[in-house]
Amino acid sequence: MINLKLKYSLSLLLVGIINIVFLYSCTKEKKNSNWRIHLKGQGTASSPRLVDLNQDGILDIVLGAGGTENVPTDTAVIALDGADGTLMWHVPGRNQVVGSALFKEVSGDQVPDIFIGGRTGELMCINGASGKVIWRFYPLDAKQKPADVGIYNFYNPQFIQDRDQDGREDLLIANGGNYLIKPHDPNRPAGKLMIISSATGKVLSEAAMPDGKETYMSPVKVAFSQGRKEEIIFGTGGETIGGNLYRVSLQDLFRNDLSQAIVLAESKNKGFIAPPILADITQDGVFDIISNAVDGKTLAIDGATNKLLWETSFRGTELYSSPAIGFFNADSIPDFFINGGVGVWPLIRESSQSLLNGKNGKIEYQTHSGSFMYASPVVMDYNDDGYDDVLMNINKIITAYPYGRKAISQLFIFDFHQNTRYPIGDTLDGSNIACTSWIGDIDKDGKMDIISSTINLSGRNNNDIDQPSDLRVFRIKTDVPLNPQVKWSAYMGQNYDGIFTGLPSAKLFQKAASPPLNQVGYHSENK
Image (cartoon, rainbow, N blue to C red; front, side):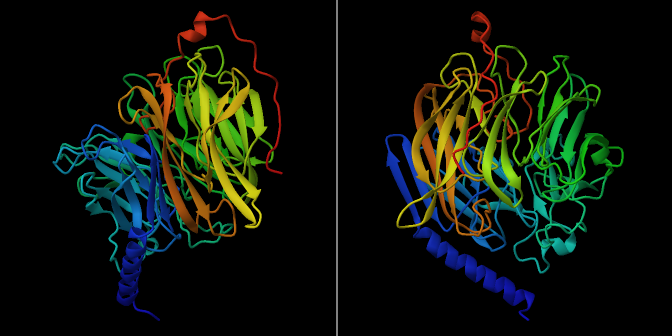
């Protein structure tokens, strides 16, 4: 048996070898303001978050990454120059970093620093300017595996009020999910919610899930209405284990106790994984909760009463991504676009897309397009007609003689008002499995930019990111004026917090009421 010290030394040697290979396998393409960077042997299940790290007035990209699952990597987190895609720095880790970044300056250099989490205890604070790790929650050289001391995967954090009196906001985060346990084994360690010091990484509060189950959901923190105290929405269960959706006071977590959490919804056979959206769809001044359950249901829950407003089921479909939200018809209540997977995990081969009326959950559009992905869509008014549109990748598996089957991906706009969809940018090698695109204005020229990615997979399943082989991150520069009322521009929204406060365009009410969307249509491109 290899002793732990030798095992760690071998891991460091492997990281060094990966580093050498990585430095000689990073290629870049640039045309005008568009660029694409190719990192061989890497992948991502993280979504891009943007911030200006080199103080040049152009937003830069921070992305979780990594190689083969459960293998040390030199590229657990990467930063790319927004101007041309140049690699600015990269940070090692014991495993893939699948979370998405939050930014807050804590190092005193006036450059935002990075908080990001991932598999097997990976949670770190990184100096934004240099890429130096300020603190790491579980040390790389620890003698015990994180799971041996009750530390599992970290998901996306949220900032909360200062809890350790150092003048800095601290972190709310979920931890759970033990990869060593077989998929259908119900004996799984309970997940937990934690409050962690942003300055030191020290645990300030923690409490186990009230039902004793695992968690994979990034929590959402919200004051449901003006003057109300902050609460947390969180969920339990997984792909094969049932769970619950909860609501609890943030003050209860300060006291290390979730026993008074209110059950908003339950699912017997599968859990709640994707973070919900908080939006006022009842127009009573109180946020409501819109959540996808893995077992193929979208639920809308009244934030004032905790009662179910509506529930929409998608037969034969599982939901692993968050809803996207926007104003897709001619009323003032936001609607929801749902991306699902047709089949039962892990045998999911096709994606389904559905548009739900925010008033009642009625399906107003439905189609099946492309192979499975669990990235969440983003929303903007692409053609400035007052009606919001959806942007998302469509992946396909094609036969490319003489090379056999090949994965390709392309970004598409879904325009429900015109009942059409059309591609944006080039067709790319690989698939986008779990990376929600980002839309915004990188260089402050008033035009819309898109940041997205694809990966190649060498594992047995076309939707399993355990063995990524090629990561491509790209920027598309458009001539489309960026509407300041972009509705949902990134994973968990433009503020990265799951809260929607957007308003419909005035153009919706300057026109005659639009005809209803065509009745539900269906077509399949991936038989």
